[in-house]
Amino acid sequence: MNVLITGICGFVGSSLARTLLSRLSDVKVYGIDNFVRPGSETNRLDLRRRGVGLFHGDVRCSSDFDQLPDVDWVIDAAASPSVLIGADGRTSSRQAVEHNLFGTINILEYCKARKAGLILLSTSRVYSIPQMQAIPLKESPDTFLFDETQPCPPGVSALGIAEDFSTAAPISLYGSTKLASEAMALEYGYTYNLPVCINRCGVLAGAGQFGTAEQGIFSYWLHAHAQRRRLGFFGFGGRGLQVRDALHPDDLAAIVMRQLSGAGAAQILNIAGGSSNSMSMAQLTAWCDRRFGPHPAVSNAATRPFDVAWVVLDSSRARRTFNWEPAMTLPKILDEIAAHVDTHPDWLNMAGA
Picture 1 (cartoon, rainbow, N blue to C red):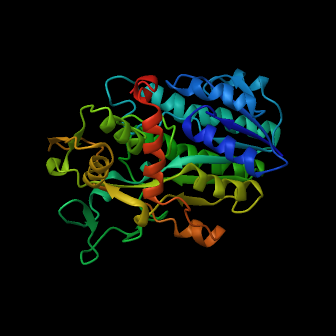
Picture 2 (tube, rainbow, N blue to C red):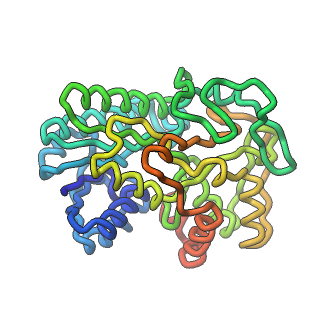
Picture 3 (spheres, rainbow, N blue to C red):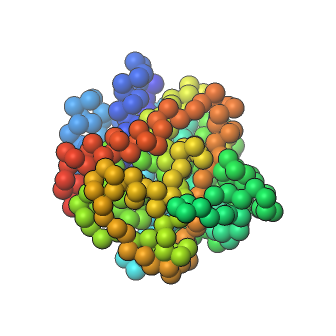
């Protein structure tokens, strides 16, 4: 089986490549990357040593696909993954659309020409921001908790946000380009009889992630805390009560390998750590204080337009479909990142954070 991974030298793409090569005996992995993300070059030599066929190219450029071999499956891990893209003063709306939608179209045209299946890595940020902001929450001293006693929007429970939760705008330029990519992938799959799998991923986290304040928050927070960089609790009273769940890329790979075998095609699945693998920023900071020594975060109560207090995904559909459970608990993920922090003190500078 031949597999192409786009964005292969990023954290998720490189992690998937390594896992596929270590666990599947009959796979040949190819990859394409534009090496724009700071730190991505660090994965090039390692992947080549493992036998990956690497191509320097950009998914936004259709002619860059002409150099690629025929494959059976494409795993799309190429994206500009920040919810602030196009709204951060550093990137444009055109960049958001070209990276995250036009790139998908070029990938789909490649799949169409090669009769290849597609596994599209999407995001929790396709869900409606106003509806997520309407999820009823209660406060404990160090975290927001889902309030089961209050009315809530359809598609959410204490387990998290399910796939039938609203995707109505606004969802950010990032979310809208990913949602449009999902729709186009399903249409190409139906029209050209291509297997398509869509994985809406929660926050991915692990050692070696090129974390920034906008993306890869768990890795970024540990590295920044250990280096005594300025950290801030933004919005929601400035107390760090907002919650995210975390998923290790090896647990994503467990689903991907089953999808490569032909299971679960044409499904939209949440793939995330879920409520049992979730933590508030205040709790994460307390964990870092115990591990690296005290380092307080600055409080800023101003809420930004795309901020959401509680983003936890319900992966029950993936559990039913694949009899799947995340093997890496959040404490294990944090321990893995912390070990990487100890041995890579200059990681944030190398990753451009």
